[in-house]
Amino acid sequence: MPRYVFRIRQGTYSSDVHVDLADHDAAWHEGAKVCSDLIRDVVEDLKDSPEWRLEVSDEADEPLYLFRLTAETFKKE
Image (tube, rainbow, N blue to C red; front, top):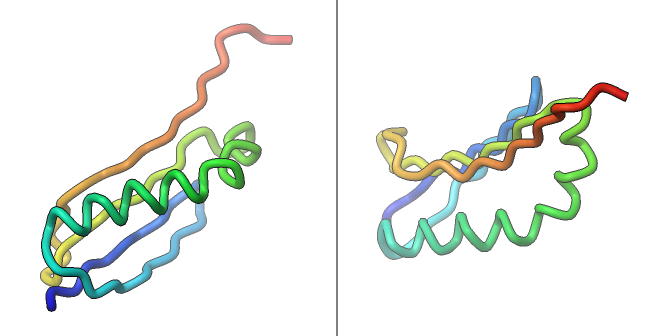
């Protein structure tokens, strides 16, 4: 079974998780599930670090998918 790397990044934080999945399609669906599971925890921190990323790579660490959540402020208070 192929091994995939799920790399979460926000600001200076980075974390790699290695996951065995059936194929690239399964890796995409797992990445989407991880994003939906974590989004509530991530949103609050976007004020301090306005981009959150989940990068999915194959066994050779070649990028396959990028899930990104950004927050932008246009008005200054």
